[in-house]
Length: 266
Image (cartoon, rainbow, N blue to C red; front, side, top):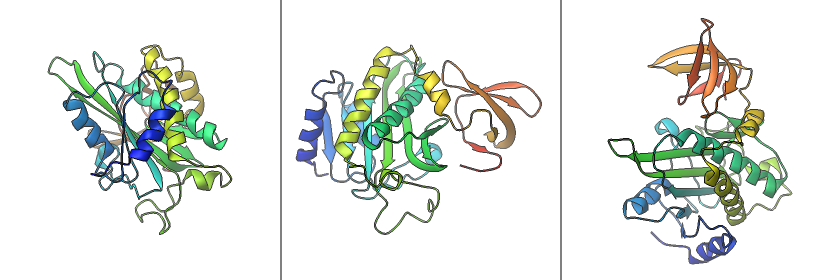
């Protein structure tokens, strides 16, 4: 794998005043930045190591889905985190969503929506995906957590992959006059996330998460053990769980899984 030392230098310089995230590794092309970050973590990489690439050939999202990552058209980045336990994994994902939402506003002047649990949307189309993966001991102690973020900066010259055509959007399409720079966006995100991460388990950002969540008050479909149910979203709890009232009138809290709006799948 070929390193991009110029991008590495730019990102490191942009993070000079960010004490936690101090080590940056930038590559031309990798299979998955999450896989590289996990390998770095297993080798003892310090917390705050950043892995970034211009292209992913095997990028992935939740539930094993492919995350299409064409060369030069997106920001693909993973962070190495280390926690004493896995209790804050949901808050980390929620905090990352709020942080990237703020960073997008910083560079484009546009506010976007959050779809629980890990996507950013604009007018119902996916802009950004977030994937937190942890390796834990048998006692539940965290060995490391890798937080991956992929965001579309530009529409690919050949168009979007058929699997996501009509469901995806880029920052350039949202605001064609904004100057979209991957390094600047990465640094803006890391600065925002660093402040939230250091404050955990305090979660003052959840009010912003709820305000931006496009599912609040809506009827949704969700799956449990392979069966599809319906419910109405009532709240986001203090651990970033999705609070719903199901079709039987019972309160449930979802901490993972796929959800979609009943009338408009997103």
